[in-house]
Every structure is written in structure tokens, then in C-alpha cells.
Amino acid sequence: MLNRLLGIKIGMTQIFDEQQNVVPVTVINVADWYVTQIKTIENDGYAALQVGLIKKKYRGKEFSSEWLTSMSKYFLHVCEVSFVDGVSTTDFVAGQKVTLDHVAFEPKLIVSVTGISIGRGFQGVVKRHHFKGGPKSHGSNFHRIPGSSGNMRCQGEVLKGKRFPGQMGCKQVTLKGLEITSIDKETGHLFIKGAVPGKTGGLLTICKQV
Picture (cartoon, rainbow, N blue to C red):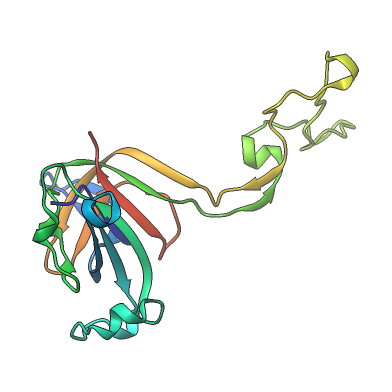
């Protein structure tokens, strides 16, 4: 068994639970990943799988050894996935397709999802740090500016870590405590309750939360 899966964010939708309540979910596609290399303790010093996401135009085709010789041509993403303790690397072979059967995921399981948050560009303190801002009338010129940055400090010293305008988003974010609502093993889709980091088409890592 693997301790995590890689997937592509499809988007958000809503489904109905057993009590017919509407549940907002994020759909993640975990299909179309192939084993491209097997890392062993003897050769590499650690045990892991190198897996690749096949490009869209090659999906549905039979695996070929040529894919492993020109991985940049055939694979969109190439990443490593570690094993659960006690699992042997002999359970996998190069070219094997990674499915939901290779990880102990089931409905109601609590997982953590890691992804790159959506980039928002250069933003001010109101949007980036949720500052309130100043009045918009009565002769005020404060509005959305940060305000004093070195107040009550010797020679106007600015303390490290003070919140300023800057680049927002496009950082690795991990959300914990997310619940798997349902699993579609035929199509290789996970339905996770709520929102997850990243934009549509972004790479995600789904890990069982300890």
C-alpha cells in the first residue's frame, strides 16, 4: 500500500448524502498515473515509487516502454510517493497503473490535501492581510494605505515580519481534517467535502491524516 496519492483538481460540485442533504465537494482525478521507476534501499538509500501522469493525448493507449525513455514527452507530472511501513517494492513493476486499490482510502476517512494556492499577484494590506482600512469620506486621505510602519521605535525601525503589501498566493498550502465523501473506483475520482487548495487542473497530494 501507498501512504498517499497524487491527483488533479477537476473542480467543485455538490452531491446528496444519505439524509438528502446537499454537500459541497471537490472532485479530484487520481487516475492515469503510472509507475515510472522503483526506488529501493539497496540502490537509492530509500524505498519509494516514482510515478508519472500521462498526458491527455496519450490516455487510453496501451503502456509502452518508450514512455520511460522520453518521460518529458509522454508525462505531464513526475513525482515520488513513499510506501507504508512494511510494504515491499516487489509489489510494483515499472509501467503499472496506480489505482485507488493501492491506497487504503474509503468514505468517511479524514485526509489532508496539499496544493499550490491560487496566485493573486501584488496586493495591498486590505486584501492580503484583511486590514480594515480608513474612512471613505469626511475628508479622510487614509483609505487603504498600510499606515505607520515604524511607530514608537528607535529611528523608525521596522520590526521583522510586519505585514506589508506584497505577492499574495502561489504558495504550498496544506488543509487538514478533510473528509472523503465518496469514491468512484471505476473512473478514479475522489470526492472530498469542502474546498481544497489550488486552481482547476492543479496538482494535489492526498494523504491519510494520522
